[in-house]
Length: 166
Image 1: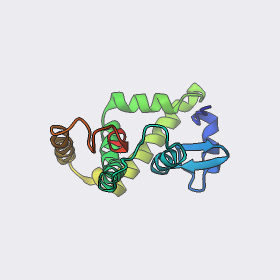
Image 2 (image 1 turned 120 degrees about the vertical axis):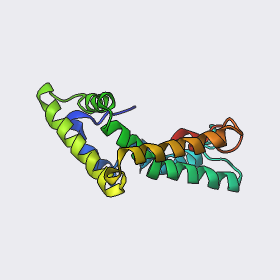
Image 3 (image 1 turned 45 degrees about the vertical axis):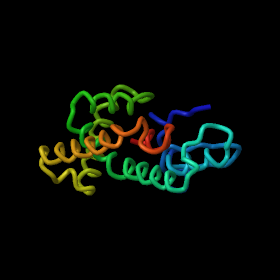
Image 4 (image 1 turned 135 degrees about the vertical axis):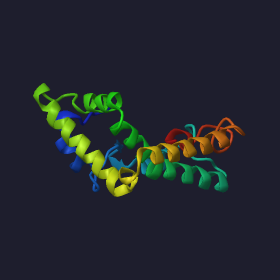
């Protein structure tokens, strides 16, 4: 059962978890928030399903590093590109406006744009020249391509949390 917290239900997000973040899963009465914690939980709670993390400790560490890098660094390039691409921004606004009255769309757009620009400013990308941000992003993509030129997956012989996160 999935609940979409766009629209008026968005006011309930802070009540879903102690940190007020989504995604959140509720599994058998246990509530887990944050994609990293959810992935770890799923591996522990459902050991007979395909693993998100490799069994090998070194590969598991590499998968965790990739996942954390994607979550804490690569994510902001995606935000930067979304803010600076009118089509991507409009799609984000459309998705965020689902369940809201049409007259709220301009307010939603203004709020999302301000929030994303603030995130980028404090993270650092929002203070860099566009050509420098784009050059750094291309370097990140080149690094990913280098690893994938040697293997189908970022870590190990199967899809892991690293591939999903990146």
